[in-house]
Image 1 (tube, rainbow, N blue to C red):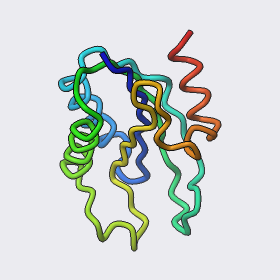
Image 2 (cartoon, one colour):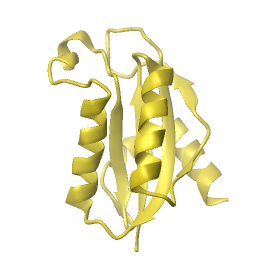
Image 3 (cartoon, rainbow, N blue to C red):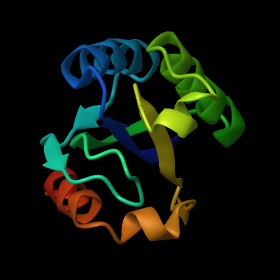
Image 4 (cartoon, rainbow, N blue to C red):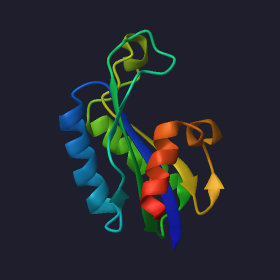
Length: 123
């Protein structure tokens, strides 16, 4: 089994998109555990809409590429489209931060809400 850490983020219809993400993620990864949701200021965006961010951890036998594809499908289902980068409207962003001990997004791992969520999950 591979242990995975993901981060979920949204600055548009946050509540609805998080509900969708939770439902889909629980169906795909029954072992998933969610840390407390954090509201944060946007990073590197002109759009001032606040974000909801949440870290989650699960185990799976799926390969890294299949997990990333499944996360992208959930984002698409929530309404995320390539043109959203121009408007900085993030319906749903789900990033695989760590896969079986391999850190895939080192910069993201330094963010306070990721570290806080990870600490909460490993206690």
